Length: 470
View (cartoon, rainbow, N blue to C red):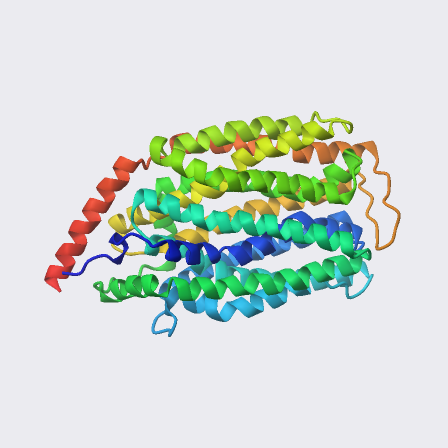
């Protein structure tokens, strides 16, 4: 009889190593979302519309390559490092290198800049997916326990949010020590690129035994007929719980990404504060989210994942909507709202990623195949397509509203009232609408702890029958 390797509880060392796998990608993603748009407009001197288009193209390609790499990861065989670790092992260094290249300004020509940043963005997003998607697809292979998955993701997002906080602190130090804007971002890009690569190898070696055991079970299982790609799409989107999780994640992260992209413009242009204050606001959000992660994890065990999401979103919506009404003299209230938002943001990290492994188990029950890669790939694909559209609209909206870009060494321009209104709308009402939609989708999500227990019992019976037949 063949037993499932995930029945043995995870050690703290395994949870730490798994969590480390999200550190580097979290650092790079955080630096990009907080600083890349303002780097394009205020340092490289790009038109806001072109800058938004660069971000959109990068995100669209990032979305397209997710299911491709997800399927390839699922189908990787006879690789020395296994079907997940191989992608991470060989992709780590190119991931760091292409991240650094995004902070170089090769020329002041608008269209050459546009072409360069589009090309580098496509290369970086390919490398990002190559290391991050196989990593996230490891989650169901680490453990099958409903609550242990929430605990495992608590470790993951402790590293993720911790890395985000660390990257903001590092940026703050560099901004203070280096006065030239071009060199500021070049140094940030180089240092964070190096820091981001190393934890990927910690993850690979620290989870090696657990994933090898899961790989052995996967290889020993009866060979199933390969489902054609078009039919896989149909199966994925006929899985109703998956569609809800995908929507929940998309709504949450549209709110996160749009807010993060706009916070520097809001703080500098509307609140009339120095650039360093934008980093401090981001730190208030991320620091609170980090503190709340394990509190929400405990709350989830007691009351369920949906209840956690409801509470977090309501708190977050209050803070998000309130940003629109802030006046430049209300600095203390701004920081208070940032802390309140952080309470809700932590649920956006924790809950959707704790739901996806349960959806994968349901799919295995229905199809007889473990297809983590394609589920994670399509979840992230649609999430990134939504983000691409959202960031494009933000960039175009700023441009349409008359936002004034500036180059290195230029005096910060005084923005017209139309641009200030666009900034306030993008940081307040727009994310609030997405959060409200996420609450509706979470209400409809059907997999409870009791339902998941039934899924696991049926899977266990099937695995025992297959083992006895083998």
